[in-house]
Length: 108
Image (cartoon, rainbow, N blue to C red; front, side, top):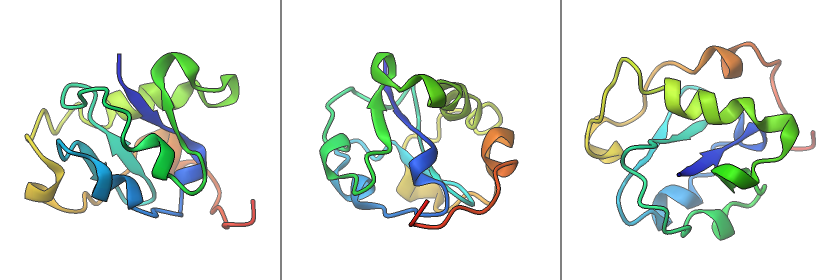
């Protein structure tokens, strides 16, 4: 089990969750943040600090955002497990689910 970042994060990239994460498992893509499922220790520190409530425990992800579990897992298919987001910085890509979304404003 792991935490998942869902659609409210798209084009917001607040990063408060990154500052709270004790294991550096939240990576920055082009349009949203992603939690590495193999590096997350399920501590939940990220969830309460998200200003748009985009972070959910895997089993608690709202139905309309269930595909974001897949997005968070598959985002790392070609990256493997780098062992910490701060080592590699921003990644210039997004999962196809995210890339296909129209631009989001903070008011959406």
